[in-house]
Length: 163
Image (cartoon, rainbow, N blue to C red; front, side, top):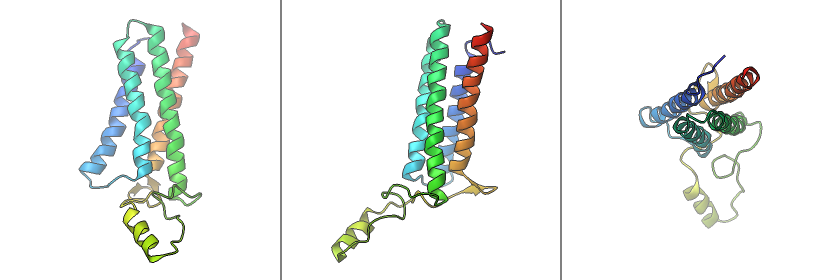
């Protein structure tokens, strides 16, 4: 049983910082530029970290702290959905946004082809830039986001029954 009001928001903040730190390390130290969907996957972690910080600032109000931790967990679960979508695009289970995938209309004129080439993103969402044991970064984000979101909600539910 977790009965300290600091534990869940602090844990959420640490996990968010680790995930975002890893993403930025791959980008700035490893040279892997993120695609559009990779950038979208960062937003729920930033939102969860924000909820965690506010929860830590309101630590005297246990109900508010628990509520903010729950909102942070839900933000992370939304991120799970974004990551699942990205994995599906990488695996070609479905088409991704035309702005960052290989799916787009065939240009009808030379000028339209030129415009399409110039507007093409440098990093495509349907290419896997890095993987470990056959799991892409988006795949790892699915696993970490799902475990974090469900874990926090489970701990909140367990604590609710005991208090």
